[in-house]
Length: 355
Image (cartoon, rainbow, N blue to C red):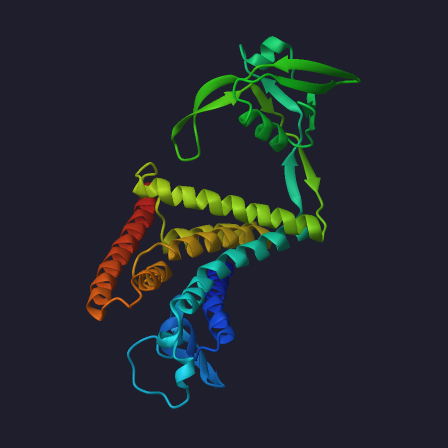
């Protein structure tokens, strides 16, 4: 029961925030909003407030905001010509459409902020847990248990500080200051360039000095300002990695077998719900970023496809012909269905393979 409620909560929050972006920007620009719906198909519950119908529909796999003039339709006396979406300049239509994916990123930032503010961060200390044989660190005389306190004059509070400095070092020498019991020692180490695999499975050349982090963690309590900056950083890092992942997927660096669908999302949500509310919110933030970026792909039917149409309209100084749009939408819909089928197939294959 908890798992089912968690899936409903996550999907509802993601859909609501995405559609809220379209809705709010349309309202700010005084564009007529006919319907705000969570879900598709037959209405379960709803009400009308002002000129807009708000409802929850039976199929919970998305939602929509229906704007006056968005599609060819009969005249609606509730709305004026000034509220007609189709008669607005392309830049205003772009703002309305782009607001959905942008709100997904805003949701991720809010969730990360709440997590950091309430839970803080767990970070590795700078204590060395092991030295690789034959490595620059071993030859220089570093030992297990040493604590790195400074590299090239820059203070190192956490292990990530060490990673950032070493990863940019190339073959330049590093002056590393360490704390060994009650002594402070200084070492000069030249990193060794090695071939390793990155998170996408690609072979890359990286500088290394041959140290391994000790499994020593420290907890950081973050105030509002620290939580704010950390949540912005986290949103940016995850967004950047997601964009790289999508590019690598298109380049076939990342196998298509890694694509997951609704079944995998439901499984992950179920797992994180059992781990606790903060783990669940962390996963929700991750999915929200993925949802926002995928919606920006230039595929007709998705927000990115509509943005492409409007940008072309700005360049050509005239709308695309209805026939061209119709063909593009059919192609986009075919691609989207094929992608969904692939994702569901991968989900089922994983379930069968794990048994």
